[in-house]
Amino acid sequence: MKRNAAMLIIILLFTGSSGAQEFIDLDIVAKIKSEGFQRSQVEETLFYLTDVHGPRLTNSPNYRAAAEWCVDRLKEWQLVDATLEPWGTFGHGWTVEHFSIEMMAPRYLNIIAYPKAWTSGTQGRISGPPILLDVESEEDLEDYRGKLQGAIVMTKPGREAETHFEADAIRHSDEDLADLAQAPEPGSKPAWWARKAEFRKRRALQKKMAGFFKEEGVAVWLSASPREHGTIIAQSGGSRDMNAEPTVPQLAVAAEHYSRIARLLQHNIPVDLTIDIKTQFFTDDSLGYNVVAEIPGTDRRRKEEIVMLGGHLDSWHAGTGASDNAAGCVVAMEAVRILKAIGVRPKRTIRIALWSGEEQGILGSKGYVTKHFGDRETMELKPEHANFSAYFNLDNGTGKIRGIYLQENDAVRPIFAAYLEPFHDLGAQTLTIRNAGGTDHLSFDAIGLPGFQFIQDPIDYRTRTHHTNMDVYDHALPGDLMQASVIMASFVYHSAMRNEKLPRKALPKAKVEAANGGQ
Image 1 (cartoon, helix red, strand yellow):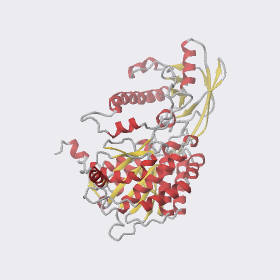
Image 2 (image 1 turned 135 degrees about the vertical axis):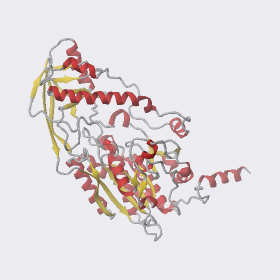
Image 3 (image 1 turned 120 degrees about the horizontal axis):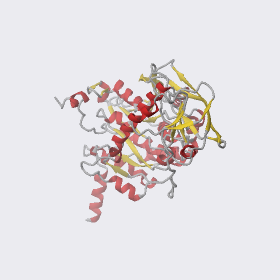
Image 4 (image 1 turned 90 degrees about the vertical axis):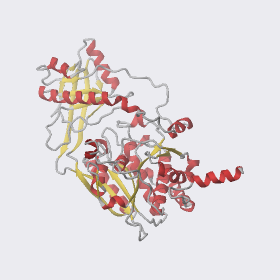
């Protein structure tokens, strides 16, 4: 009886929503593993996307060069219809041509810093003492009206750097994964929810300061990076709008160097800084572009149906965008390369997409979904919506895949359990009903299409590399990228070969309808 019960559990594990056993082609899985582990090209692809073409800020020359390189490589691997596809208006491009910031007195220091995106340059070298402002609210700005013409301003006192007594880079423990596999408490909010109001308040104040400093003629605005060890988080400080006025030059400064300057000023010791920033805006093309290519389906009844995979190609600009998100693009590209190399003939069309504008609000994938599948605001759907099966995304760093978020879609649980079973010995077996947020699968999920993000080992994504100057080739893990590529290839292949498309959740209400109380 025990043996029969065990067999029943195994049968149920591999049963899909239709009640039929979920078929896993272990011969294809073996070929995928062989190609992915013995003839991997992840390091070569990563090198070109980071060392050669990074960083890849959307609409910058580097982004365009990286995107064109991806198109050429996908064509070389014999995918079809590889192209740069416009998704809508993004705005102007921007890049750093040169910058330096030095403390000349009371002692010399070559300061670690980086310009914020879409901010202006200094129009040459400027020198002077920085002014440490005490601004906690919009009202505090009035204390400085008429006093900041040509000034170098610092807007926060120095923060204390934290000593890290635990490793920056970690893998998920068995306990972590067991906790993740549990459904959240009904009615509970994610951890970031409690910080949402404070974040909005801080962002609103930053916007007010930017306008005030522009009016007052501030020369340069310095702010402290929120990371230790000389790690710089440098994101946007200006507008990508083609008609926007130029902003005050802004530098994100290493916390330790910022704090040193602040302490000197607080002790009334004179400080002299010399700063030179040269940035460039590009206004010749305001459109945003995604990279798209296909492995055509071969089944007469299903070749119009689509299984998609991808990650975002754009990055921030202080590093070379290795873990965020060259890693995801490398994995997606390697997955389709593997499938072409082993000669699969999928029933459905497999389409890879590498997105732009993710860092500014998942814009590339939103634009693509609106263009191809329907309008989220009105829920007016296009014919392609009915032919869509699934989208698989990778965008949580270099860490290996440990499982997948079901995105509150219980109907895919037995299917994905079967997909993961051949990879249990590679550490991938966790399923969680929870949602993953913050990246491109949400564009599909928002319009009722199955979109999924994989669970990944965090490594040092949140502690060291995410949006920083340390997000570079050296901190990517080739073995983890190989593992993820193999699993991605298998998920995509088996989704393309199923008799049915992946099951969907109920369609969401139109945003317009929801705003009117469902009337």
